Length: 213
Length: 82
Image (cartoon, rainbow over all chains, first blue to last red; front, side, top):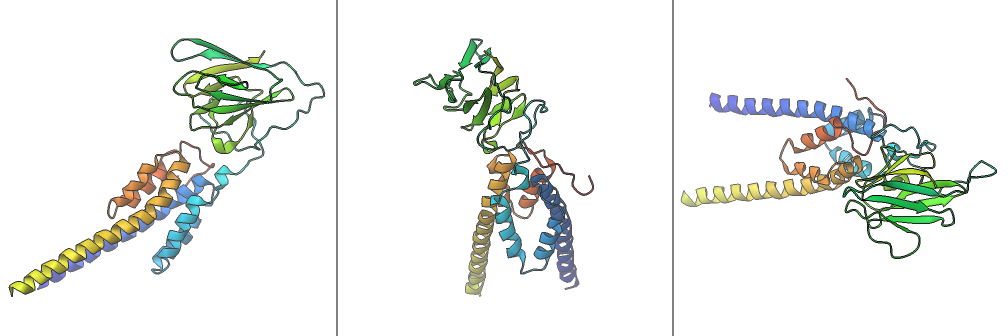
């Protein structure tokens, strides 16, 4: 009988130890996850205390759902970060969905050019005239005015939208394909970004140099 | 005596089935929000299926989210002890 009691006590001890370790680890990792999303990490202590109180684990579960579907501070607009000079691999912050009017009295009326090489080795040059306000970049062949074809499988159909206004050029992601501005990734939730001062734009695997026409 | 043993075995099977169903339901309730969190962070949503692993599955998912750089970017932060 003593052996059975010892076995049960050992089992209870192990499970208790596991519970303590799991609670500490879980709180620590929740701290880091919350901070990565832009929230104060100490909120994880509140959640841990709620969970440890037994019946309140359902509150922690509800908070998990709320956290998953709410807007994170990481995704909040941060006052319009300049595109030029962003470090490679960085993520561009959110911005308004349209680009504003230029501050200059006499804006540059020249168009834009995107020049580069397809992965297949073929050269590509796209002209963006000021006369058209919106251009759609697509991996398919152009079928109507206002489309720019970048014939590569890595480019979405459509992939992105270029917005031309007042001598400035904006870029907005439309599809799921990757888009980079000077090495910084542009995501659909970022909206339109001013790329007038950018030098390299990448659609999928196709990198194009941006310059005035 | 035989029927008692059979009854106990049946009860045990039922208990295991019940536990399995409860585990799957709880895992599903965790998988849906975790899928969303993983995709927003830039990871594959399939990581959330770790919740199907009993006992330690949730720890694995949390560890990946907590200690790996998020491909879609992070708010500037440093966790406790870092």
